[in-house]
Each structure stands twice: as structure tokens, then as C-alpha cells.
Length: 248
Image 1 (cartoon, rainbow, N blue to C red):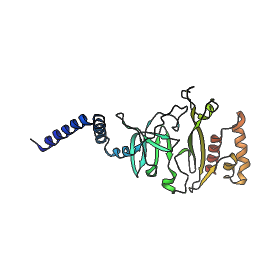
Image 2: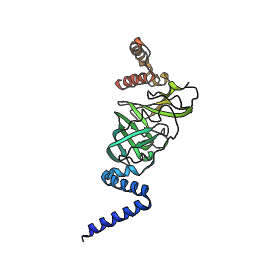
Image 3: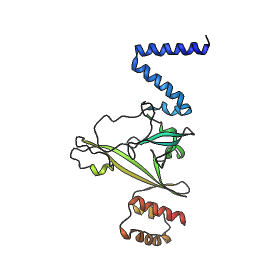
Image 4: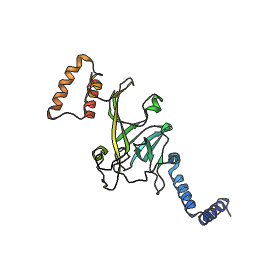
């Protein structure tokens, strides 16, 4: 009998014995082996630790936008991976990979993630390229010109026994009346100059200070025209100023 066929038969017998002794474990290992072989080089991504599971009843979502995973691309360990189902746990600032075949989602080690793109959005790990002095977590590129506006969405699990924090979840999904905990939303912003300098932006004045004093009056006039129908949301204001800076 051919050696390959002998090894194949032996493997089948071993798997069959494992299924008899440890039925659940053997099946899971067999499924993972099959999946890993099919995944090829991308199987490296699926060796991360199991994504954290929030085994409680809650409102809102711990994901950046929502629970849907989207096919995307990432640079992990300086290698580019495409057509990978991705999402971000904004409560833990972890990039999650969804594995087909019903296997557990995996959380990638953030220290090896340079950036990723999915759902039409791009996310950067600033510490990967700028060192530990840079702000931690993932930063979504909201404006990308010579300069950038970056946003980090954070989610926090809080008690909410009376529903007063419902508006703070910033999520249009189902609201459960029997849930007394909620993931609330917050966002931080950074301006990154063409030279790579990072400036935290918490107020409108933080953006205006980035504009040369001789140009601020002109910029304010332009913003007043844009706000004739109402004040611009904070993020939109930041984008307008960043575009103005890039045109000077």
C-alpha cells in the first residue's frame, strides 16, 4: 500500500478514536485543521486568543459601529491579508477576526497590527509606527489629506437601571427593557500634521489654534457661512478646519 494512503488511514483511525474518547474536542480539532489548511497563510491570524465574550444582558454594543463583521484588509506583522472578516471591540480596543465554520472569533495581538480597513473605513495603530509614546488603541481616519483627523471610539460598560443612559449608547439596535447595563459611547480626536505631529483636539479652539493667526478671521467667516442653517457638529468642524489648513 502506498505510504501516503497508509498515513491517511492511520490519521482517520486516530481521529475516529479521538472522537470516541473525546467527541467534542476531536471534532473541533478536526474542523480547525481542515479550516487552517484551507486558510493557507491567513491561518496565522486565527492563532490569536479567543475574543472576549460578554456573557451578560446589556444594551448598546461594544463594537465600534455595530456587530456586523465586514470583509477587509489588514497589515499584521508587516504582511498584508485580504478578504478577512473584521470588527473592532471598542471597549477593549481589540481587532477581532471572525473565523468561518462556526469556530470562535479571535482577538489579534494589537502590537502586531499596523492598520486595517473594512466597512469603508481605515483604522491605524499609532503605537505600531510611532512607538509607545503615541496614544494607544485604534484610530479611525476621518479625514485623509496632507494632514489627518483621527477619531477613537471607546465603549464603556455602565450600570443603567432606569434607562437614563439610553441616548449615550449611540446605537440604533434593539433596546432591551430587561437589561440593566449598557455600553456607552465616547470619542476622542487627534489632528496629525503633515510632519506627523499629533495634537489632541477636545474643543473647537484646539483646531483654530492650528491656523495661522492672520488666517483665522477668514476661516471664521467661511465657517459662519457654512453654519447659516445651524452649528456644525464637532467632527465636521474639525474636518472643515483641516481641509482649510491643507489648502494654505
